[in-house]
Length: 434
Picture (cartoon, rainbow, N blue to C red):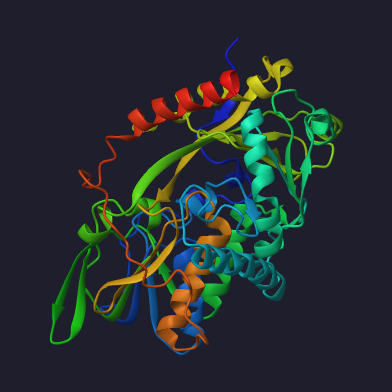
């Protein structure tokens, strides 16, 4: 039996509710020849920066190489937290780490307030998250972070002993874990659609299918070559994150796009979902090649994510591979069929933390979500907008840190398959030796 359903769709599950592909146009894009601020990248970061700037009186144009709503902002898992993942894989000075976690915690509250104030129907739920430990040593590491997370991010976290794991998930895959009560979920498609409407209402011009090119400087002004003609701007904001590609040479050596795949099961029913997710929480785990999964917003399906391929982008092959991951957690779902399969890019930086900066005079960037982009990229865009508008009361901890380049890397992440195999081996050894 083919595990891909008869009506399998190689696109995000979220697009069933809002068809972002309908944003694609056959007409030639119409963009102005001059603007105060040009933002390249119409995701969460770009739109939030645009909202701040437009409300401060700037003329703002946002362009995207693909149709509006194509990128990671509508391809993610819709899992949000109070910043618990910021810098977790890197060594940071204690005061820097504390400041980053504190600001990341602020970003979680800010997004919730924004959604409420703008009356966005994002299916926002503060349902909490269970972080499953894939090994005994991983459980110890989680316990070692407990006090820090509670003190610095107000995560309202507590440990779950191995024998109590089934209180959180109907599976024997994990060896206990941690519950983060100050975490939640959104419908990323509806969230994005709401933010887009807020931006347009504020006067922002958002245009898709316009590919930005070389940035030139003449007489103190920036001139950006695009597929729809040259645009003159006082400032340029680059918020392309994992979709930067070769557009900006300085950034392409400093941001690594990593594909993350997801699948949606065919409907299982609300009772079945409740039985498998007793508290209806979001789930993630401690593996280097982690799984992350959740009930769908209507609580009838499982949405399951993880790494499948690193260089090839095949939603069909990726769906079949992730189905194996799903059945490793829930073996009795071996015959469940899939309705959707898709992938999107997350962005990694050399130092493992998000960045706001200025690569050259008047050219700014917000990058480095590290898989936590719903809140963090929204926040980085908001803060970048405040920086240019002159409305920030203080400097963000993520501003103007050195954004180092990756050695032997020029935009093509040839090393990802090698790292993937290494991480897979380390995860396997964790389970068997520790």
